[in-house]
Image (cartoon, rainbow, N blue to C red; front, side):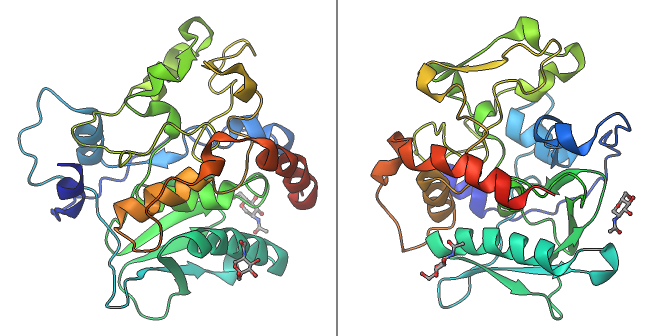
Length: 288
Ligand SMILES: *[C@@H]1O[C@H](CO)[C@@H](O)[C@H](O)[C@H]1NC(C)=O
Ligand SMILES: *[C@@H]1O[C@H](CO)[C@@H](O)[C@H](O)[C@H]1NC(C)=O
């Protein structure tokens, strides 16, 4: 079922939501907590599909859109980084390193766009965000210069474009984390809606505290207190801070795109030692 729905290609009407992402009170120092909130953009159709909907009138018109796999078994995602956006060489190198980390462990390849019709246009927009999956044509991925160049943000946003949402809204999350609803901003409660397992899959991979798609413990907190609490408390200060591709992230991408390169669940999915040390390293190397 899950594989089938990812394979359906429907006509996706790209409704451009006006998302409230610019908050003048946010500053770069708070970016770790703030800039990644609301970082996902999807169409009404995608939203109804992913979360289920009473009014869902047809599944056929609605779908994720895969990027295309070529004869060599590679999924090619063309990107454009427009110099007029203000990115400097170190920004570009930093983003490309994160994309390379994805391609090193999956069959997804990133190529500089020449004349491909579908591509990801990386912009210095109003925060860090991406559309979900391949939208068809030019699609933006925003990497705000003052605010997104930390941790694993570039790869996080690109994995949205590859087709994945956040780990903490996975349908089985209640077996692994507890949401402290009393600490969640009233307006943001829907950010914790779980996906409908009939339409959104993690491809039989285990819940992944180390995923670069996981949010921090204080995500959407209205009082600074913890919102996302892992059942395994070892991970309390690790979720959302790993900043690198987890073995599970790679495996999910490989399963979604049926890459031939990885089929086993790598062991490091359940260990934290390696990843914790990287958090501080990444933070110091890349902070602006
Ligand atoms: C990036 O965008 C912000 C907000 O629009 C703008 O203020 C800033 O000057 C831009 N940065 C560069 C280097 O162009
Ligand atoms: C990708 O793989 C190459 C070749 O093994 C390696 O040199 C490079 O460090 C890797 N890059 C990242 C970002 O993982």
